[in-house]
Length: 181
Image 1: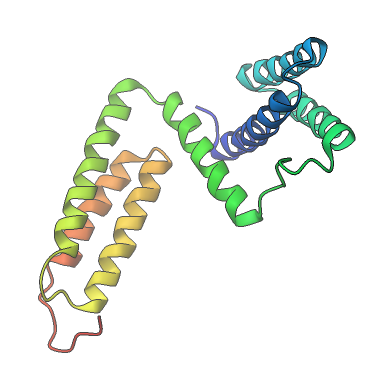
Image 2: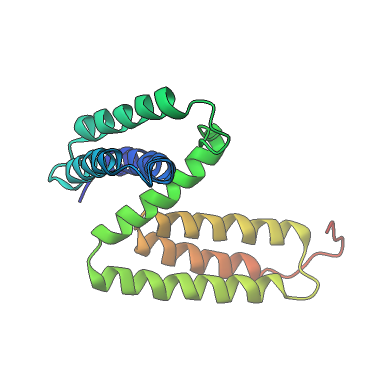
């Protein structure tokens, strides 16, 4: 299975390629030769990303060609997608990376992860709805639930399952007298 850094790089190129190619497709809708050029560039980038191992350099080169094309033809276009801020770009890339990582997992692992994800959500909501839950315990439940979700995002279902059990232990502590939330 591909390493996490490689998956992240593929996801980043894929995200930028999807956004920019969608914009360019809108701009060249009536121009057959431009549509053919776009289709060729996107297909070449897709083939490079799908190769085993992925050719990130070739995919990035096709992406750079699309960027130059957009900068040349539509730099002042009101709907030209601006580069996302770093935090937003990371969130979007994370979604792409999760999809790539998830697709690379065997079916039985994906099924097990789905079961754990559902268990996490149900148990998390039950703990959060518990009356009289101390603020510190609630914060700990949120933190441990976040760790479980992160483990699932990365494909580590055994760790996620441990964190769900840990979350239940944290949430089962008796509330203290003083409440801060």
